[in-house]
Amino acid sequence: MKTLFTAEAISVGGRSGTIKSPDGLLEVTLGNPLEKGIEKRGPNPELLFAGAYSACYHSAVGNAAKKLGIPVENSIVRALVSLIEDDRGSYRLAVELHAQLPGIDRTQSHRIMEAAHQTCPYSKALRGDTTVTLIVD
Image 1 (tube, helix red, strand yellow):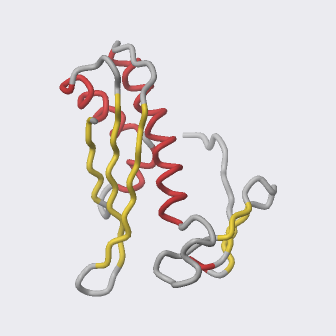
Image 2 (cartoon, one colour):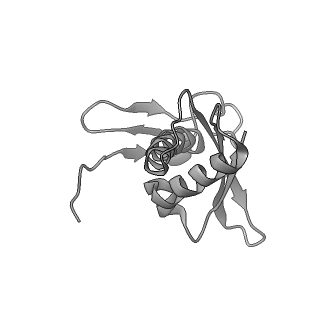
Image 3 (cartoon, one colour):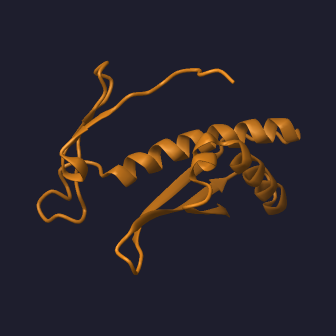
């Protein structure tokens, strides 16, 4: 196993603060939908995660389709990330991944999505504590 690269981000102020990378490529003031007045200040962690997960999973969809010999063009992946509070006051995430694969029937689309879910690093990282629902649009 070899490390291809490592991303680093620094948080100050938690969900209502800022995040930045030492190289200056990322500098974001966060918004917090749970805190009045701060909710529209910037993206929240779940929005950033949804963007990152949709991009990573989209690449995995392309790779899976290629491995399965199914040509896919003009695909779109949408991720919905929800913050969930359980009965004990603990938090977790729930994710829906939607994919539009034009010209591919629902059965083949689902097959591609399942194969992608097995190889996507974000999907692997979430196994066990997060519900991830795959949906063909």
